[in-house]
Image (cartoon, rainbow, N blue to C red; front, side, top):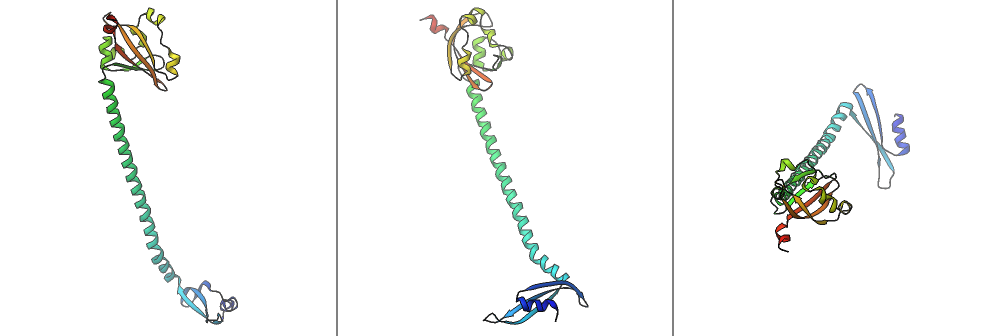
Length: 212
């Protein structure tokens, strides 16, 4: 009897022995104690399995689990990608709708609307603003908004930039000089709408001021 069998008899615990090589090939032996209902040792069962058979058993048992795991990972990744793409598509649709609504409100507004940077450089105007000033969009974009006012007006009624920069909506009435030289009275509402963007609404109130 081998020492391994004796060791199992003494400890009464299962044990794996090997691999060992004999005339039958390369083997692994499982030694399992057999006990009765009162937990008394009756015998030790020894079961040999060749390494090749052992590898095949492991492969047959582990491969389906591994394959299922890989497939699960692929499916989860695919579902996540589909969800991300769907969310991106929905976000893109909402952004497009918001942009279209903004453009409709901006370009079709009856009041003149002008946006500019913190230096007073005009970056965007709508058609109503062009109509009020007499300039077209290309002539206004990139110019300082001061071009629309005489030096006298700028000195007498300067824009309250401190309130505008603080986020307040500042109302003022100023005399505007159109491209053709005509001077009109405009009602002007100015506000800082983002970190680097100012926006003003212009309304021609010349006729109203004339009859008051």
